[in-house]
Every structure is written in C-alpha cells, then in structure tokens.
Length: 293
Image (tube, rainbow, N blue to C red; front, side, top):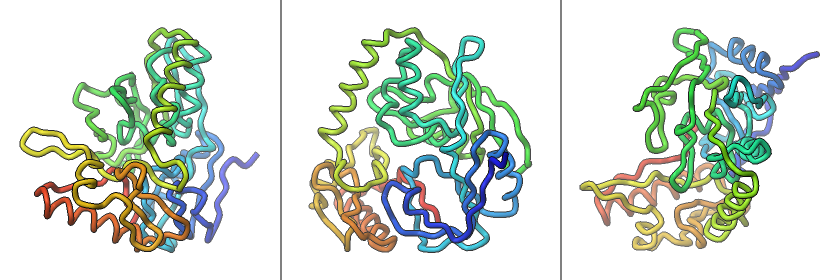
C-alpha cells in the first residue's frame, strides 16, 4: 500500500493555524515513519519545510515554487510504551500525547494537551507552558541530519534545551522519534490539571480567530525578563491592525487573522510591533514563530 503521497500546487491554508492563503508546488503527505524517511530522501535537493499542525509558523510567500518541498508529519505518528519509556514519533500530536499519559497513569505531560503542535516541532523549539517543557522528559532523539544525509540517535546533554530553543534547531536536524521518561502519575489528578490548564488558556488567549500562537519570545534586558503583552500594552498596540491582521484585543501577545489577512498584512504588523518596542524600550524582540520565506 502506498503510504507517501505527493500533491502539486496544493493549498496550504489548512496546514497553517494562522489561516493564510499560500500554495506549494510540492506537498508530501507521509502516512508512516518509513514514508516520512522516504520523503526526506526524495527531497534532499530542495528546501524542506516540515509542518506538524501548522502552529508557530508564518508562511511569508503566497506561492512556493518547485525548489521547496513541504512535508506534513501529522499523519505519521506512532506512540507506544516500550522498555519502560514512551516512544513517540515526530508526527504524534501533543494533545494525543497528553491523553495517552492520562490513560497510562503517567504524570508530567498535562501541560501539552492544549498546545497545537506535534512532538517533532515541540522538540525543535522545546515547547512548553507554565513551568514545564517537553525537553525535561527526553531520553533520546532519533534524527536526520540533512547536511550529512545521516540518520542517527542522539542523547541530549544538560545544555541541549533552553527557553524556546534546542540544539536540534541550531544543527538543522529533523526529528524522527524520541524516547520520553514516564514519571508516575494519577489519572484523575492529571485530568483535573489538564482541565485547569485548558480553562486558564481559554480565559486568557484568543480562540475566536485563527492565530499561530505567541508571536515573540519573552525578551530580557539588564537581567530582567519582560512580558511581551505588557510592552505592547504600553506602546498602544492592543487591538492595532493592518488589513485583517490584528494584535489581539484579548491578549496582545498574539496576532490574529480577522478573516482575509495577507502575508504582507502580518509581516507589516510584526515589523510595526518590533519598531515600537525598540523605540520605546530599546528592546529587540525575537520571533517565536518560524518564518517560511
């Protein structure tokens, strides 16, 4: 059975949570780990763009020509317990990971339930919320290194993960799978925590419009960490819009698509936010989003 599909001139609107219109000349849809590896091998001479659930990315072009290869990983994700650890393939969604842990009485992963991503993307940026990140639980990671065309297993050292970053991103590695520790938990307590986290995020974050998650990393200056939404509040950015791209009125740390935002709308708004914060506070904001250009 064919487990790897290639679409040409395919719409990417459903594959990015910001809901931007874009078209890819090459869109690969693998439905197994082996098919994912085949997609990587077949695209070694192209600019690869890996998409899990499409959060934390900004599609900066309306059309990506034949030099690009988009690979959607979310259909290729096995999750299992093996030799006392969880083995999660890159395409496993984080909500699925969290519910699997609840079912298996594994603690620590409640934070992941409401993050719209996959294990692969989460490892690249060390995704997390509250005081938890996925990097806290990693034993090993199977990766593909495009530069050397090599598949290998790595064991992260203490400096491997940082705030919204990992050495995977720095090395340009592609995540295939990982082994995760399984701290004991209680299903009912984990369920209560998941619901508590979910309520908190729905209370604070914009869920009524498409968005790609937090736009900027929390900046530091002179040893002090700042909340982006507070900086935006003080620079009059709450509710500010360009076209159909708007700094969320509910939570200024997010940019939302009011309906028909274009790439230019979003990019212009991002640049305006950075400019105002720089002028007022002498702080250089860094994108948490990955810009696909």
